Amino acid sequence: MGQKVNPVSMRLQVNKNWSSKWFAPKKDYVAFLREDLSVRRLIEKKLGSRASINRVEITRTPNLVTVTINTAKAGVVIGKGGSGANELKADIEKIYNSAVRVNIEEIKKPDLYAKLVAENIAHQLQRRISFKRAIKSAAANTMRSGAKGVRIQVSGRLNGAEMSRREKEIAGSVPLHTIRADIDFAKANAYTSTGVIGIKVWIHKGEVI
Image 1 (cartoon, rainbow, N blue to C red):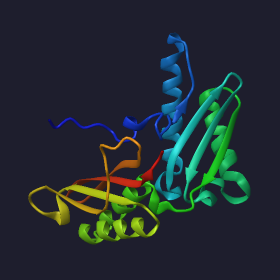
Image 2: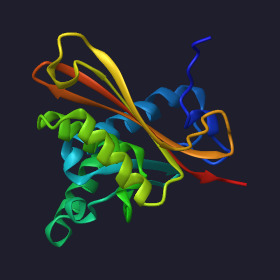
Image 3: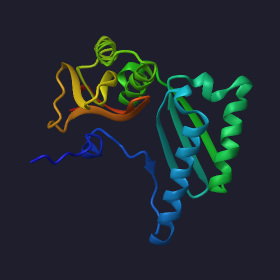
């Protein structure tokens, strides 16, 4: 009872894939993992929510590291005349000490990606917009974009209330126990003057046969 599992890790190799793809001998594993985490932190710090980054994929081959950034605002990542992408590539090469290729992939429908929806709700809550309005409009936008279902949960001192509580908005169907269902899941935090509000978003994009 009460055991929870991340919907993405539960579906690895069914319809999800790892965000870091490489094999390493035991002695190199910790160093490789530390480098990947440093790169992810660097990208988050430099671009953050400004670029609406959904996912960073890292693939290693013996002579090259490929970093793929999925973003809703490719122009922000690339920068004026490609200066932003070149600067980011130089910073990543310092961490890996090897040749790096940076690919930037643009997301056409940001409302279908849980991380972007959760961050959008967090920004609205930080601007003191009512949580009910924020989660209802986010759910409606996601369904309009073609999702089969969406579930949004917020918890904390909602609207500055004295007692923390949990509220959720559900539209369509979100079959969490069906492994073939393509479920996108993400968490985000909204840092408000009354405390931290946690946001969880599940988006059902249909079944993968």
